[in-house]
Image (cartoon, rainbow, N blue to C red; front, side, top):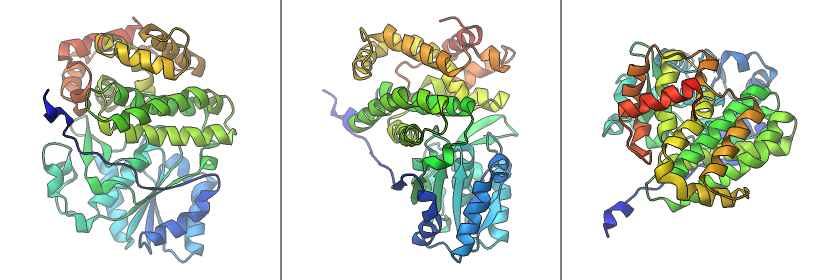
Length: 389
């Protein structure tokens, strides 16, 4: 037996304040991390809603010199990060409130990282020992406030940022990018439209599903992934059907955080394809993972069938086996109004060769149960494009 396979580094989430109304503790959370002048980072859509004005007023009423940067795109870019850093420095800020969906959280974390760095952002891409280049003393503390239940970026140590010049999504990583405090308040997610609720919820499912299928040794992450998927099964249909269902909203926020905790075990081909597709077509990440999910499961069937049988039993599916789990995924997508093909969201085959090459070298590909070649990734992509399961 090769005992080296059991040599792993395990990390778990940060301090989390969970429950309805906990956003009222935002200023206290900032002060706990030593902030006096936080920069709230969000996207333009959220910035137009009352919750952002209320959060800023709350912080200012508590004596904090709070500022706002709200130009974050749906797929945050290197330019978003540099503009945010400029706003951080110009305002004399000393911390970040990353407030919003995965895009705002990723951008906020990257801005906090870059606030005190002299090297360019891409020098910290998650390759080799690049994280050792970070001046940790220059990093700013982060309070993370998710308003969607999908990416789980609030408990992550990385940010996915689009390199617009090269049409790539790059993963920026450092262990200290993990937010110091997280507020999971389901009341902030009540206004999320059904379509986005469904897509972000399927993103949470993809994180737990891929972590569960990873070949790496991490029984704790594997167990968290199982329960994360059960929560999605029980609560995502409820949250999508009735956005005011606070219990469902809370459990989906928890499932999202659990998915991101679980994927310390790794991701896989869903994300290896979703990353280049998101960069090339500016498509919604959660929607991409939701569409790709059954096609990737089918491609991985040879290696994951025993895992799917166990998952089927845990989810209390009838006759639990690979096919039953696959049917559940397909039926769930249909019930939530998720498209069945990539073509339905405006993706075509014009860049199929490039997509295959990019997927093969994507960091997420390294923990897929099968090491697919660029040709095999192209085949999976074409099946997802055409709807051939």
